[in-house]
Length: 410
Image 1 (cartoon, rainbow, N blue to C red):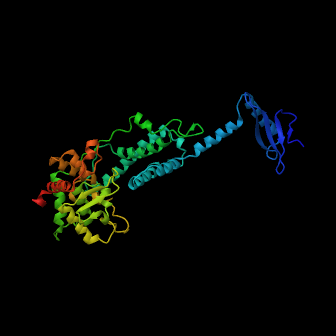
Image 2: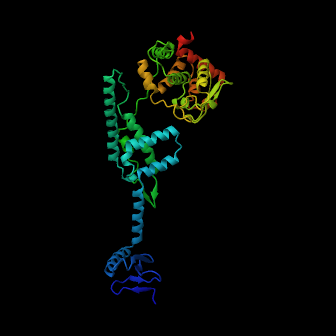
Image 3: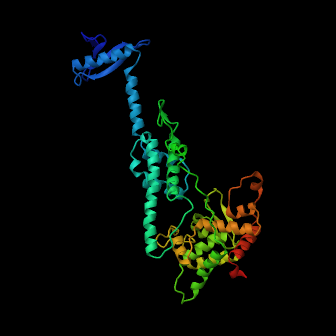
């Protein structure tokens, strides 16, 4: 019995016999300029003889032109794979690849959800330059609307309205598209069998070409002498039982530690008692922004602060423990807004860090000394050879402390 039965009307069309399953229609013919190939159409139970003959003629025409129908089938499958790869898939792969710090990862993922939630199930390659430009503008407008609502509430309640150096909403839009652009960049050269996932490249690059992503003005805010005096008085006077405003001691200690040391907010909040060495009068911030552990000596003021907090929270894990979860540190989401409203001027954690640098500069300390205090990355080979002697650092920090609040130490 022959393994294949020729079709009497279409040359090259066969019924291929199978022992334990229905026969199948197949085209067996020579591809132009190539070898004999077999192209399976399908089961005789699924395709009538008329359907098989019609499809066979199409396949034979392609083979006569030198094309192979299976290549088109594979191409369609590759395109299907590309089109099924969504923005959420790209974000997941990116998040598992990059070495994000926990706070950065939380901020990035929440930003994706907040600003691109309706895009997450879209194929990555379907997001266009027009989509990007429109969303950038939408984010800015959303921030403007929300600020107007907050300003109205503040005005109605006699609260000072905040002003900003940069265009309202620009910072939020910049951050959102900085994260999104990084995800796209990871896949610009990826392909499936030669088919680029992003044939038109990173659509976020269009914002730069259109000059939409303007350079943000760097923040230069720091606390001047009058503001530091107000802050000191605010923390000192409430010891009087008749004083109407009661300062939250956690707020006060956190702000004082930041302005005494120049630590970043996350570094201060993450301090554990295991990181505080009372015997050697020093403490260490781990997992810092520049990736290097940062050990600072205690001054009299910071030693008093640590001792005071150890009396209150020495049995806890963190120097600034959460009141809700014993395994976590406190949050500072409302600390600066709360204290700013009470002292009468707005400031942030980074304003305190800039204040430390500014006061140190006013005391004529050089840039390398200030960099050692702030744990800045060292830009030159020579500066990397300069190490921070603990006693020298203690003197710098003590001088800064005395200059910050002269009324306390004179």
